[in-house]
Length: 301
Image (spheres, rainbow, N blue to C red):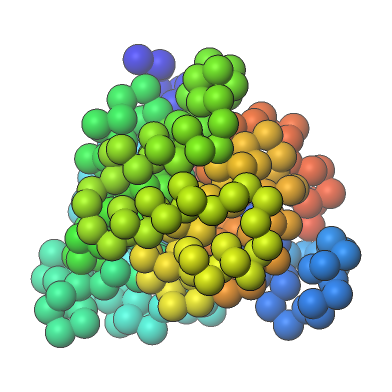
């Protein structure tokens, strides 16, 4: 097992990649199709959204507790809540209540007539968990579920968080052990699928195995989704596919992802968080880092 400082450094790298991807994707809402097709960067600054804000809370809890502690994460979500960051509608009621000690279990379970949410918010923030627990995939799965449960009670939301965390963990292993640790995109997807709980997310991930790495993006979206439904089922398979075939190419991964449109800030945040784990910080273009809205100091202090 790596020392806590090393684990946190890995989680910080995931957060860096996630936040740049978040701001990058967010900046293309309203941009022209030509800008995406020609890979023209939008002007900065690129504001990050709730994806990054909640991922910073995840990182903060890992730094303070060495694990995902439900109450601490709920409290951080509530205290750090900024309503203009683009949260899903249900979170505007739930998150502020956490700051005042409302029981997260009851709040999470009450959503959507008692079935809980299976929105992609459970998966958008989880890459730091995968990076932190990369040496122990069972712990990775356990704490990915914990990170989801605070706001998302539905099993598909848990599965989405698990798959995304596993992708970040496997990408981290690839960087630490070399490409031989995960030789190609298909093997990467198969490894993610192995540990993802059975259900709709698992089934949709399985379809990604049959999509060619260079398939037209319209075909990819038609098969896997693009996050436009804001669910884990139509976000996580697309994200894992885009990341799997660009593990050494951060810009290429995000251009491929944003060309699918849909929930671009979230899909790019997730892909950015995963791919960053497979490269070093130097793999993220400096120009992109400079355009991203600066991160606050509180998660790191």
